[in-house]
Image (cartoon, rainbow, N blue to C red; front, side):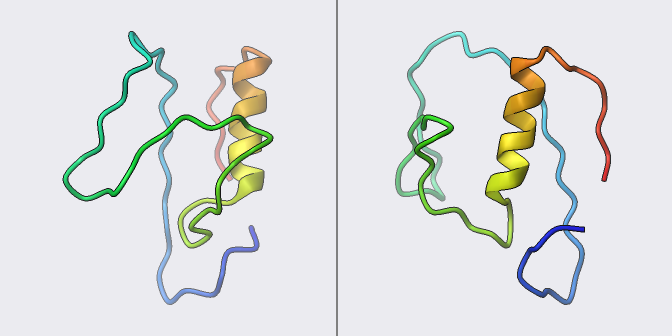
Length: 72
């Protein structure tokens, strides 16, 4: 359904909308760095995992207060 690179397996994503209680974020043991990004200034993405179009869809759902379940 999406232009992900070809893969021999399927990927399922689950996204949960949460509100941050602070702007401070901590990196886990398995990441080099973490940051917040503006929707119009995203860093290069791991397209095996997520596409810009998918992030934009989720962003629009939040902006429009659309909390309905979405499945593709």
